[in-house]
Length: 453
Image (cartoon, rainbow, N blue to C red; front, side, top):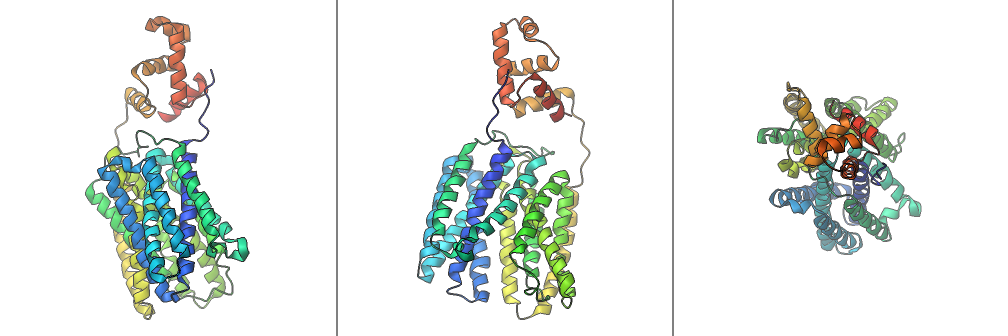
């Protein structure tokens, strides 16, 4: 008996959702920045976009988390469609308005809904994707979107993101985002992390404080004195290094979360290296490329950390977007410090060094709370079976059928033992295969053994 598999796995559907949503929202943000360059010099532009704009993104993430906490339906399909529609409606005046007040008002509204949309796809990441695949789904999605945003900018001599016609592309991508969200229903139970205990408030506060400081220090590093790389570096290459870093970070993170976390902290040291090599162009270019590569670990770490914490228990899913929320708050603070300390490079470096030391201290505590495994009790065979049955929502009769399939019984043997007809047995076997997405009994037994080892 062959059971037709779903067109897309939950992992693939979530990857596509993250890719398309981040592609158009990040590109729309760049289009809005290009419009603001007509009104502000670079120093002021950073304040209005990367300080205030990031705060509105954090606010959108916070409002989404609060809504899901109070009413879980806020993470549903209709609510997401409304968020994307409002986001697109704000993007139109944010890219077309002629007056500065209207441009800022629409742009901040757009950033607010950017944050809410990000909260929604991170919620789906924590809910649908097993923790062993979560970093790859997120890293691959962001990496593909980073390259996609560059490709989207190429038409019109590289000025497509500045042209009003880009709104048509954003409308198509926004519609695709909603379609992908509707494509697969969310899992009824979260893809739980290894520990089934809900995160304690102290752990959430520790993780949040660490993400804020890491993001703050990372942004401060962009203003460090360094060699002039404009003659030896094509800045568009940074997208490639960053995208590759995101992909590798996803792979490493799913193999060992702690390795990805350590690489994230290590990425904060590259601005200090660039400053030390300010008189040597060749080594500076190498360090510059490595820095953008390792920033991929930074992006994956802060998002997946809170998805893991959120999926420890079903009632904690509202925390899924908190990593990006705390990250955007830290990004905003870091950019603000850069603006305020731009005239005092030595003070900027000194403040960064002190905050880097604080990051190391907090990360040491977080590492031992999250990445040092506690002794776990070995599960019994019955507990493994119950967990498998719960994961695939098998009924009591289907569980009986599964046990007999695992024991190698044929349909007639099962019918005789259960005192039912053979057609009834076939019906229940078909349902078990369908729920577990298995083609036949052999693949069902193989899946059970691999998932209950």
